[in-house]
Image (tube, rainbow, N blue to C red; front, top):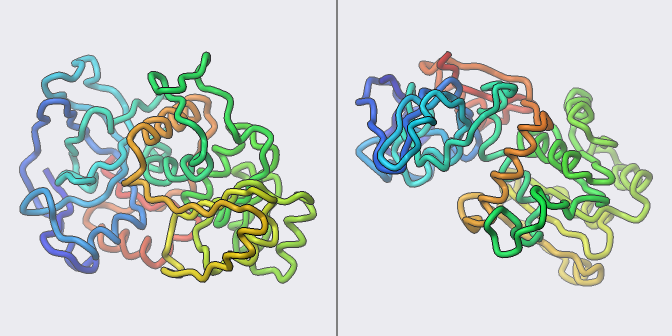
Length: 343
């Protein structure tokens, strides 16, 4: 099969496209013919920070969408032919999605309804699961079979009736967070962005109000629609946005930070957070507790089935331009979803 591979850590220059053996699924695994491979910031960061860990070479990219072609021992044969979206394909594994095929544990290949496009499927994974966790990090585990199983599934969301602020509402995580917050009945969803076209994308995703965070009166604009403050904040640039967050947070609000791209460090005014009894939480999807990850998957699956999630505008690259795709995401793809197209 044709794949993008790297054998040492570095910039996108270490990526090369070449023929490698097509992998066979082992016990509990499926082989997926990739239609689209999603490119996320986590993918170029992995190449820069680590060399191959699971084999002599590594295929990058965690997310994707495609069709199950074969299954290994212990997997229901009826899954052959199933359309799926993939998450964490390259997590502790050699076979990421930047290839014609990927072999992946069966649970990491989630059924994609016929009503959902491969473009949406390749946009889920890291962004959507991160977004859901940021919105629901403090909720008790309620997935089927979990210790606090609700009488009905899905259970009522703690977001119901809540006021939410989402920073970067035109990015992949922010876009998903807007749609998931609306799906889970948030009372008010406010999103920030930095340009008119990005603000419009956030509004189209379902934000009740959009605010340019660069406006000197951004806090006043948010307080105009949320006089009592917002109760949940999904944050990607804590140091840059902390003053705005503190200005609009309601007492006992939760602020969840999922990125360090803009500023790797932040200065925390402890007394101001104490005074409002705020919760400041950080998250990294790869170390989320397994039961919480399963819950996130179930809720994202439900949102997809309900037609509540949509992809950002798609920027397509053929596999031979994988370096360009990774460079674009590293430079900041803006309000676009970058994918490698195998269709």
